[in-house]
Length: 239
Length: 399
Image (cartoon, rainbow over all chains, first blue to last red; front, top):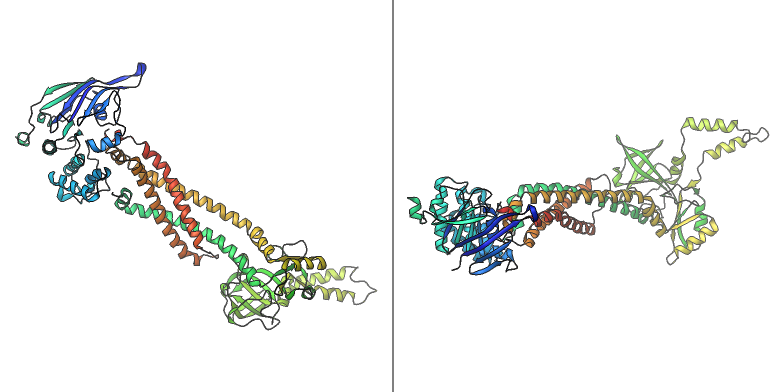
């Protein structure tokens, strides 16, 4: 199974008496095509876990396997984390954080271009994603000309642009109303299924928690796996 | 690959253009200052070129006639003319003064030259209208830049002169246009006293027992007559025969005539190295200040623009953008700002240079040097912003 798997992941900030263990041995496994929720109170270690999974900060110990490849085992197993983030991890943020001086199409096409794909091919791939997310008609619009929902869909397309094995979504529905929030989750489920991508959604949003089949609850730096209500299909969510 | 710098500039083109205009005007001022310096150098060279002289014979221990006052007897000219290797010798006087033109004053350099000797050293080289000086009194040939036209009357001290000829690019080392008048008038103008002063001088002479001796009739009249005559000129300009060695001829004159003689190279050194040296240093200092101010402005602008994009830079880094790409984006923006600013500055300087009250010589090589300096300055100025961008943590995008 590819997707992402982490075992006994630990993260300690500082050293000596002032050291803080933010992650005390987190286990998690998300299969391709699966969307799981990661919930927990403030200060429970959600952001730290997300940063470790996103190869932004280095864990203190444990193991991470991404797309069938061990990327961390008590130390990074790859030298270029920037390339890892570019090619293997998609990011969706609370706010869309689109590049304001690029139109919707180029915001999405930028990733394949950064990966060295030709401009035409990159834009073609970006347009396919925008079509899949139903915002192709806004491809030429600048981010400031897009609605909040459209911006978030473009940011989802950007996360999918390099077909990464995992997407990390940090509170992707926080600024949206119920209808739009459910719409975004529906899209995430659909995209995970369509592109065989594992998606981890960090959320506080009570509206969308029932949509996950599996939930990881994080508390005091440790995760507990729980069964969700599993309304993971588009039809179920809208019921 | 998308040009991130280009897209960012197009996205906020209004701010970018306005910033470039501000920077461009500053660059325009800088180019103009450089042009003023070049103009001063050119004025000095033109003064020497247009004098048509190979040697300048002046008072001993002076740097005359342009840098210091020099006074030698006007009959020295004939002794100089008799020296081996001399083709022509001409007396000249120079006097920088205000003259009236219509209702306003114009600063000019009045040159006294022998009338009826066109082509002699010190004479206006060529005329654009009218004729050369032909009469011994009250005629003038003026540089076009003085604003005088043929037939105009120039008031110099107590006398009026009719403009009979116009010339071009005959200026002093300070850039003042020249007005040529007959030598005798110029000699008189240099030492001309008002009537009260003349009466006072005569009374003092008469009261001096050594000049008004009772036993020597006619002595007082002779002394007073000599006081009303000015037999001095500022310099004798010499043109040498073809093949004559300027340095040897000058040395010969120094030895036998006990006067100072300067060659063309020495005179150029006096004008450029001494006369305009202080102005050159002032302009150089201003250029340095303007360059520092321009660099500070570019640095501040690029730094501010970068600070406004910290979140975007964090996102770009998080999604795998190389530092090199982000550095390139910032540097390209700084260079684009410099290029546009330089273009605006060059156009501005070219536009206002002819209207500048001093001769501004904008040379292509100075523009090329200026362009290179602007680009280097912009690259250096962007380093601060690049430092900030490089330090941005991709984790900032996650929060």
